Image 1 (cartoon, rainbow, N blue to C red):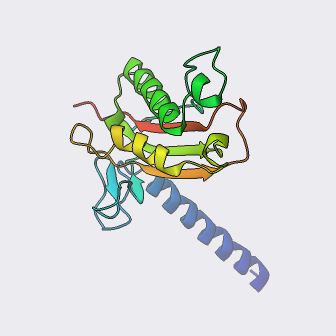
Image 2 (cartoon, one colour):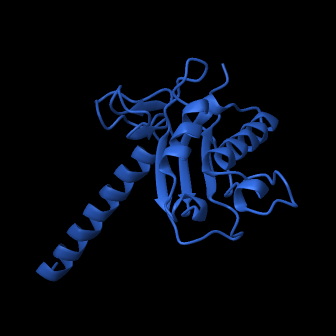
Image 3 (cartoon, rainbow, N blue to C red):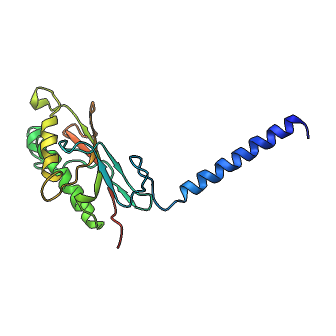
Length: 183
C-alpha cells in the first residue's frame, strides 16, 4: 500500500473514531455540568446570589421545553387618549404580559417557577421623555421572580428596540420554561 492510501485510511479511521465518540456523548443519559465533572439531574441556575437574574441555566438533556411566542400587553381601555390610558406604562404592560404568560403556563401544567429564560423587548415611552423605562420592567419582573413565593431567578436578556408591531406597546416578552421531571 502506498503512503497516500495509508494516509487516507488513517484519516478515515480517525474520523470514524471521532464520530463514534460524538455519538456516545450525545447518547449519554445526562448533560454534563460544565462547572463540575458531575452530570446534572435537574435544572440548575448560576450567578451571583445578590443579582435578581441568573447568569446562566443548565438543563439536563432529557427535559422538555416550552417556548412562548412574543407575548404582548392586554388592552386596558380601547377609547383611551394616550398609550398609558390604552395599555398602561411599561410596568403595567409588563405585569399584564407576565400574568398572561402565567395563565398560558398553567394551561400546560407549568408555573412561573418553571421559567428558565426571558427575552424582553422594550421601546422608548413617549410619555417618559422618550426614554426606555427599564426600571418599570425590573419592578414588574420583581413581582413574579426572585420572590418568597417564587425564588426562581431566570436567565434574561433585555433589549431596547426601535418599535414593536403596535406603536402602543412598550414591551414584548418571550419565555422559555422547562417541564419538571416526573417522579
